[in-house]
Image (cartoon, rainbow, N blue to C red; front, side, top):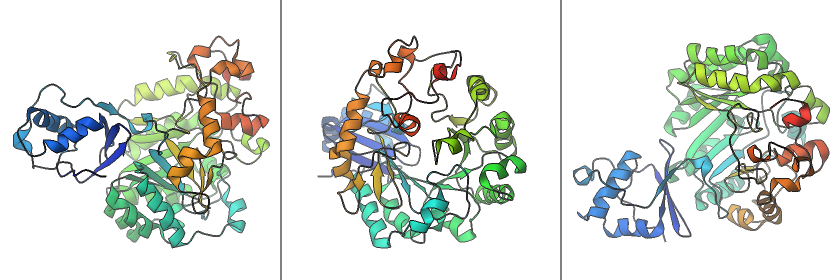
Length: 437
């Protein structure tokens, strides 16, 4: 049963799970993970001068989780009253429900990007859009699961005619809402909806050079995308720029980041690794070649050093131990969010551990069971979690590798794509590519 939370800000999502309670503030992304017993004590002491409650208020206030002005007179600094931990949303793990979900609302798109996953031009002809009732059914499952962040994608998510009805249903329950767009279909009405529902908008902008951009995203698209970004900035919509790294834009990535920071004045940048798509030959024609992979660590360090004000997300670009300051890993396979944090829902309503594992369909949310049921009980999810609990040495090519302690073997989706083998060699393994570490 949900406990009363009148001392919490209206933007806080409360998720109770076994012996823990997660408090998530969608406005600033803050997460507090506390014991259920401490949370119950907070409720019991609600509204009085008990020292435990007074000190707990200060902790909540620091994270922006306290109801505005209600208890300011009771706040005081002191020892942490609640046995909690500050966390980041992508660092959380659960077998009960995902914390973050990427939801492809539609296969429809007005562009035809060469690296699209899945390629809109191949999916659209056989795709029947889900009805509002079906989309609403999925949204209801997300609410019941207490998912903390929902990212809408496509295709082009803004081409889904029911998008605002679905978002209106999701908005009140306090998940952070993010929308990925190519930036070319924005209207005043769309921008007003983005503002109304406080949606973080992520715009794909791979390069600010028309000739290079045309190679992957099509001719005359760049100017439209940049125009869309300026519209969003004028409306003060919170923005993230997504840059998919390919062999075509790699050599100008530094200049592109400088353009984003100094010209567009956007301090949130995600550099996305190019995920496997289409055929091996098609993927090989766009992915970084050996010399670029060799230069990647130096580039990442330079970007961090030269642009300290930027909030960078390097996704899995730095997944392998080729950075100068190597990080000791757990010794287990594939320690990414798949299976414990993130889920992917496609435009058929099919559920996957992530976009990199298209062969691991867990089931359909409209026909095979609800999100919570599939997340907990699907056979393929069970096998994925068993795999991720195994030591790296079960991968034959990793057994004698001197970099074992710094590595988790790479993405298994990549191994399946290249070798049709869950236990195969990931194609970006630096030693396999002949890259010195």
